[in-house]
Image (cartoon, rainbow, N blue to C red; front, side):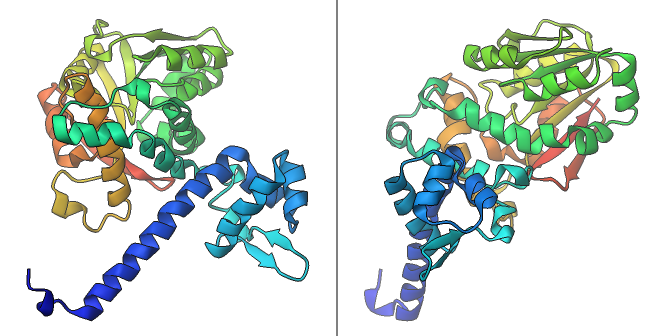
Amino acid sequence: MCIACIDPKATDAFAERLVGMLNQGALCLMISVGHRTGLFDAMADLGPADSEGLASHAGLNERYVREWLGAMVTGGLCTLDPKTGEYTLPPAHAASLTRAANPANLAVTAQFIPQLGAVEDGIVESFRSGGGVPYEEFKNFHKIMADESDQSVVSGLEEHVIPLVPGLREALEEGIAVLDVGCGSGRAMNQLARRFPMSRFTGYDLSQEAVTRARSEATTDNVTFAVKDVAAIDDIAQFELVTAFDAIHDQAHPDRVLAAIRRAVKPGGTFLMQDIQGRTAHHDNIGNPLAPLLYTISTMHCMTVSLAQGGMGLGAMWGREKAEEMLREAGFQDIAVRELSHDIMNYWYLAA
């Protein structure tokens, strides 16, 4: 490398960009803290307040709240009146940071940053030795995914998701059998079960923790959850609708899972798959505003948990082209891809 040939302006510009990245990465940690502690919700509810008032309203330690507010003010997320010492979360910011903003609450997504950072040592070792970091190392992941599901799936079931499948609402009202593969904490199936008492809902997931949470939140008797390897589903032509919400790409053997799903769908039935909005080739994702985040989540969770099981390591950014190819290989012939306005992170695949 010729040092003398480097453009100093380009060097300075890139260094400035890196400083910005460091600040934004740090703010992601603070945004996650603000979401988990309820501070953003408290600020929106309380209006202008000093650190003591905010801490009291939120039921938190004032010293920590005060330091957190320093990050919020200098990061431009909230404002400070130096005369009164009162901090304010602007309504335009609350619209992307509070639980009341669901499904537009991006503070939910910020939780991925500290979660992934916690397994960095294992990821670095996997870079050197291969293999992966297993699910059990991600201590808070099921809670984060439940929050994410609330945003992209549960909040939009009635208005956005059900209308994707022609005639589905009427069929659910009359009574059909529905299976959710990789159901996680079961938020979607539990909501559908309450809304459509004539239908029967089943959720399968490999995680006992997730299934236990799903069962604890069930309030009707037309929904059941079971711990099961979804690559070994033995239900043949049992369900009019099978769903998989952001669950296929991180399976150890997604090809086997898709084939099992194809067998489980009744003739004339539908498989509805929500999965990451990306393309298979790197260069086709350059204009995707979420691509760096999605590749990071893929590297540090989706891909690695699959490889930890000796799996394919497909990764979150397997892409639309690969997804359609694998759906066809599984036996689906009629495939359509949809996008929903409330869910900027995913494609919605309809397969029959």
